[in-house]
Length: 103
Image (cartoon, rainbow, N blue to C red):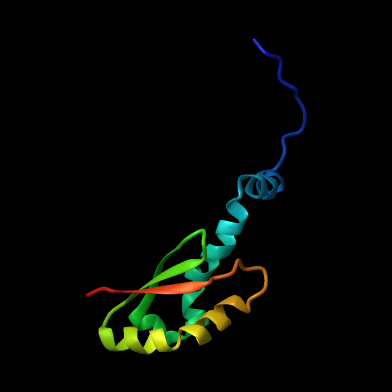
């Protein structure tokens, strides 16, 4: 049987940042913030008709849109939306938005 060191336990809050950095999950979590902050980023009106589904490692945000008219409008606003999304400091960059029509 291996001998274990006994000592004061380390708090999870102290271990977690290092584990996230080493595993590469920190950058993914930073990217995912755009999903949780979506309504505050794009506003209530857009958030009613468009919801983020996922974000890839390559920075492609997939957004579900409820109708074709809004999808067209949002596609024309994509550069502005990307600027707003990416101006938040500490967030991994979103390079592109993929719009998906869902009914």
